[in-house]
Image 1 (cartoon, rainbow, N blue to C red):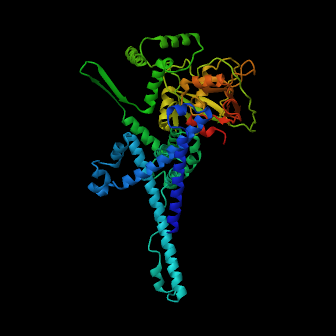
Image 2: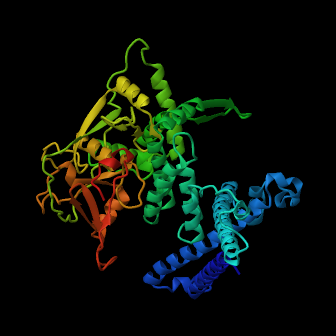
Image 3: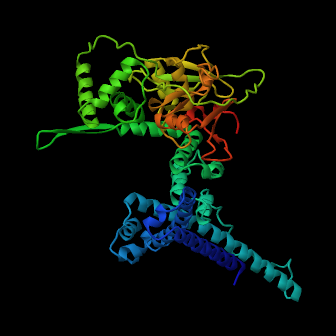
Length: 543
């Protein structure tokens, strides 16, 4: 057995042992639902981790098998391919039939399998080249030692390496290695590969490999959705020109179709680019948010309106339909010769004010506290907020949407709707307005939305429109000021959780930390609460 085969056999044995161990751990949890109900809280949490590890082990093998099936169904094999022999046009359809999964899941599995095959082929070619080099060197040495060959003679060329140097490993090989090693799930591997995209003339293999290294280092701390967002944002940063191409394609693909059914009812179907889509979503949110877990209003009039929406006998879809028709009717009453006024600025320009000395602000605990204040209460749904960075040639982001927006679109929106400048310090803290008032005013809420990008509770994805401004320092107990650095956006559910279970939030030089109660974590290990706005990520202090 060669050294390469020995290593492969040892690795296979190790992976086999890992699968057996995972299966045994799962079996110990119990054999029926009643057994699971009898588990303690600690055992339930440990059991979930056990199941996740077992799933990763199985996913790795699913990818291996999908790779094998795809290789045996290659298009050049024609009707002799495995999928064709079973009556299927491609391996994805065969896997879907065998496993009962969706088309999307089957394609994902085959895609990851093919990625594994590329990495394995490159590794095999590199091993073959090294083996050929070693064999040629050995033959040359043996011939010289036996006196049968002069190393300097032309005959020595016959012992030269017969292979050309192998091509370098694909840039995504580390993804394959992580999947094979059981440290990365199939979904996470697909998210990284899809989000980072393919090589082109601007984004080369080495560039993608460097970007991938950083993402893999942080992958364990992110779920699949977060990993996909980070990967896409990384690709956008690497390929500014590609943003314009994708943005133009999104505009070219837009449509709105209307047709009449046999019953006389009318059906509408549409596809909108991010800029238009977020405008529509903002309008939808303004009409229906009290019915869908939106913010709790402190203002009496807004609270009364929210109550009326909740008590409306129509369902949410009906409210949306009627509201849409009301907007169309209102639009027909506008004088086409008059310019519409009262629109709030669409673009927020973030600038950084760098002090001469770096302050060292101490962290202070917060306590249970205050009534909820909506982060964007009272804001009209006239425009979405586009966040960009002044003095930067890069792109911006529409609030609530991860699709990047080109500088040209930013300039057009500024021209059309104006802009608001928000100055932040070197720790990414919007400079407070100095108003010692109990409730965050509209300007402060706008700055909080720009900084936080939504609920900052770890793992939460609620946008700013569905958040409330939490005062880190208790207003009465700690003499807390209603200044921006002492506020943070939380969705209603996590805002209530924080107070009811006595979690605490600390702020230190622009970074926010969450401390769990001792009932959840006796050691009260601090958990960082990073902002979710991709346009302000680079302004955060170095980690």
